[in-house]
Image 1 (spheres, helix red, strand yellow):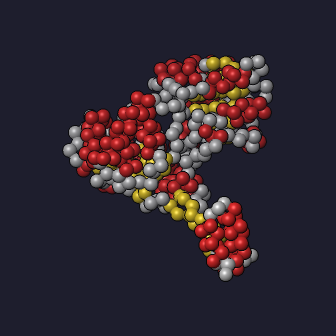
Image 2 (cartoon, rainbow, N blue to C red):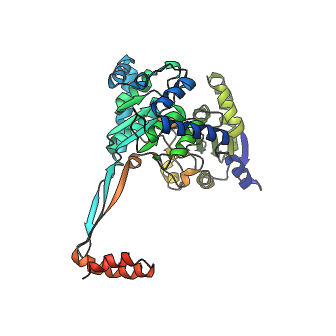
Image 3 (cartoon, one colour):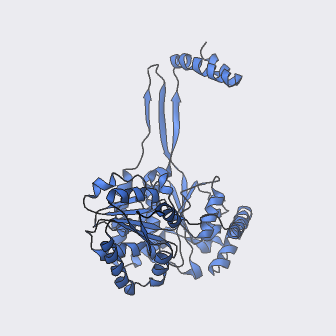
Length: 429
């Protein structure tokens, strides 16, 4: 891992270099995705079937071959061992309970002239959630995307998940059963995103698409944005651990591994004011790496994007953390509430030495779909609010029409919009 010291004369440039990561679209990928999306928009089901057979090694003859029923989901759930079913149900209950606190309600008030002003909150009609398939199974992604939509009151939750060579994951399908997914299609890639965005003869167009995917999925989400809403275009996973030296080094080492094992371009960073503690953590990493099944991925991630940053004190650690604006921030310190108050930019803040980031990934309750690549400076975790929309309410009284009409008339004439002014003036008479 790279070693940085805040006292270095070139520290600011080193920090910027640490964050440098090319997230621009690959022109070749973008061109391929554009062609696929246009084809799906024009040919619908036929194009989806063709691309699914080509890219996922399937032998589908119709969309019926790529459609799962609620009974399929239920059977997958009951094929699982009891302890796995219990884990899914418990995680779902915790995620639901947390997200219920986010649900917004309509509100209104009347001002001094009797005019009613307010906001009407409504759920989206239909959403699509993309769940990766192939290399690994991600039941947590199912629940983190579907549960907030369910709590928001979305009537239809349509899930797409690739099943290369027809291999279905029972735990993913079971998670969909627990999370209230209403329809599943076993398709993936850009063709699945396009099908959700434009609709096909079988798949109904959705209002918003959420969920992670590979570079082709990300490019497709960028392309269809505007036709439908999207959650975000996520970058590589990140963890930043601020440690005061009181947490067992092995715990911190494994927390750093927990993100590094996602991908060779994931990022794990440790910030501490103790060079000695940093050495202890690195020694723990050397000892633990031997037992990691994804050792090669972890080592590549730590070598290319990992870092240990030595700072003067925890105040400076928080300042650096605010600049980095990481997806996951662990405050592995005494009195974490005090230091959390100094954090302005982070996707999720894990407070105290017992709070591993992995608990947030699966079952703590808050959403694990988080802003990456410093977008936590302006973006938030996925939540119920992403599946609700707001309409303004305005009901003007007769007295309000006289008072507000005069103001509107003056401003409309100032903009040269005579019809605007007259529409207001007529109600003043």
